[in-house]
Image (tube, rainbow, N blue to C red; front, side):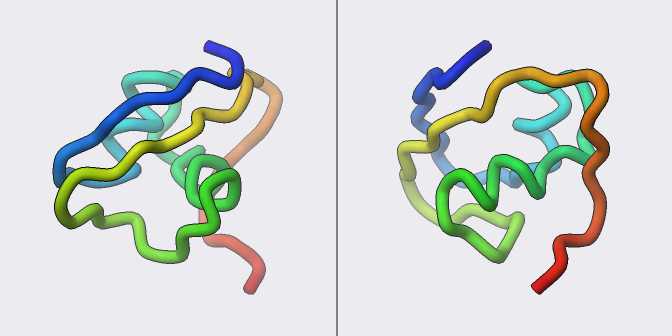
Length: 63
């Protein structure tokens, strides 16, 4: 998925990264794309998904 927008109601970025990017550790990419720092979502939120890139790793963001 490239530049797609989804609506999430609660949950977390780990699950969304696993579902849409194929790697839960890429939650950081979703967070950075949307200006978020917390992987846990509260309420309803629209999120832009980054382009799927199997060569990119995730993990702890450099803050």
